[in-house]
Length: 146
Image (cartoon, rainbow, N blue to C red; front, side):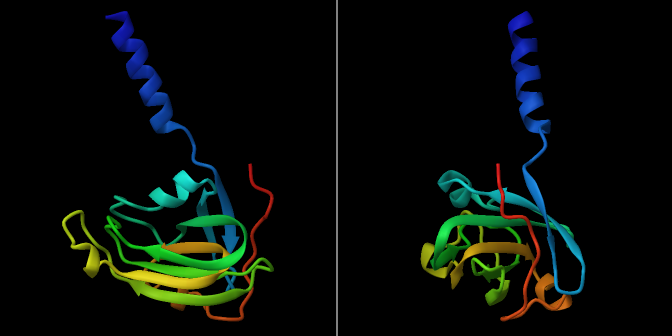
């Protein structure tokens, strides 16, 4: 019985642990609490299987340097905006309202977005347009990540 309790508490503490986030300030001053995706494993998982995303939350993917990036929406259950951002925090392109997919969606029907940058900010669909995110605008966020 004691072992079960300790395992349960360990799992519970992991589930409740705060996510590593940064605040991203959009062009109109709106603040988004963005969960960081820094490692290849975090990049791969992204927002897969997430069933809801409030307008003031998102995910910031961080890469070592600027490059051509491809994001595939497999098992992404919500529509998203994908904001590609250069090393200088300037938006290079925006993929608006990327359609969701399911585990049973055939691979050839899963949406993808391609862009250039060192960062990608994923937001709930329609958030980018609502807050003035477009090519050429600058976003504000820290670049020192743990």
